[in-house]
Amino acid sequence: MITRILYTDIWVDDFFFTLSSEEKLLFIYFLTNERVNIIHLYQIHDKRIEADTGINTPIIRKAKVKFEKAGKIYFKDNFVFLKNASRFEKYEGEKNEIAKEKLFARLSKQTIDWYNNINDTPIHTPTMIPSINHKSYTIRKRKKLTENVDPNSVPF
Image (cartoon, rainbow, N blue to C red; front, top):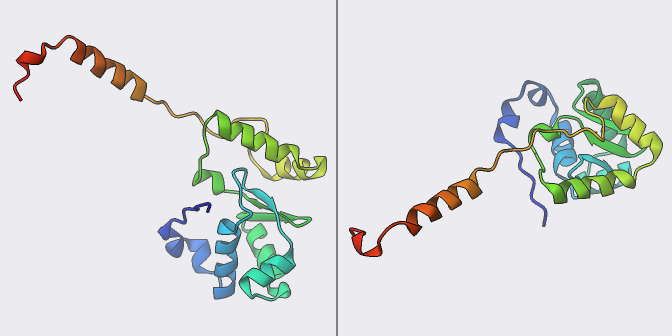
C-alpha cells in the first residue's frame, strides 16, 4: 500500500478553509487517491471520482473549475496535475528519476506540452536540489577513530 502524507495544517489553509465539505473531500481525494504518482500527474475519469467519493459529476466539474482558478490542481482530458505537490513530496535518487522518466514516456506530446505550460519547471529540468548526505563521511570517520584505539584502554 502506498502512503501519502497529508499535513494537518491543511485545515487552517486560507484556500481550503473556504471550500464546502464536498470540495474539501474532492481536494483531499485528488491528493491521496490510488492513482497519484511521483510526478503528481495522473489520469482519472469523473465516473471513477464519483464512484469513489459519492459526489455527483456536476459538483465534481464545478470543484475542478474552482481548483484550477485557484492554481492548485489542473485538469485536461481526464488528466490531473497537482501543481504544488512537489513542495510537500520530494522523491529523490536515481531510481526515482528513472521511474519519473518512465511515467513521462507514457504521456502524449499534447499532455506533456500542457504540463510544461502550467508547470514552472519543465519535465527535463530537475525539480529540486539533491540533498547532501554526510552519513558515509561520519561512518568512515568513526571507523578510523576506533581502529586506532587500544581495546584495553577503553574505560567501560
